[in-house]
Length: 230
Image 1: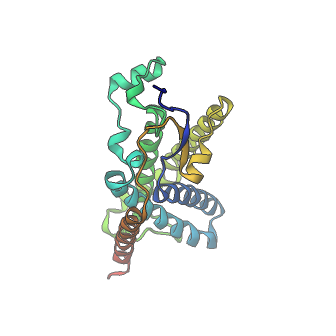
Image 2: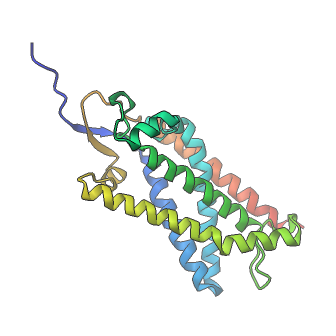
Image 3: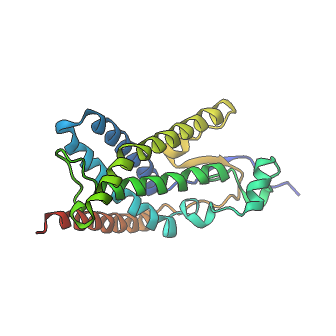
């Protein structure tokens, strides 16, 4: 009896909505950082990119519950024992650590989602006492708005830059070891042994993502509109 063919074959790991989220968030962070440093009229783009990041985070939080298999939070929240085995290089085959996000990649994802969420929240209530205020600044005390601005312009942005830098360094490190992490985030596929569970990425999934994306943007529009109310 012939042995089963377990040779690597392209397997859908990252569904299209996850890939679009990844690159859109990266672009919004770049635009926010550059426009914030330029200031002046460029701040209009800073706010727009910030609202895009707000919508993307809202979408990803929902998609982490109902998205493709390897995009769901439940599949990359690791128990302490699993993380310890990974760090010791003793991961078990059934844990499928290298399919989606490994424990360090998982930390990076949750850290970025958390810090970008805080950055968005502080931006919404910020007041630089010059010409720019977030749409919700009037709903908080002046001291709170100033503290939020201080965080937003100081530690918040540099923590994001540090996490992004670590993310890029990790990509380079894995590339030097023969693992291309960028290509799967472009194509969605990764060469894996036969039988590796794939992420659902059909039109029904994409339609669901479109609905969630519209809901996320509606949320952003509503929050921003609060700033226009007297």
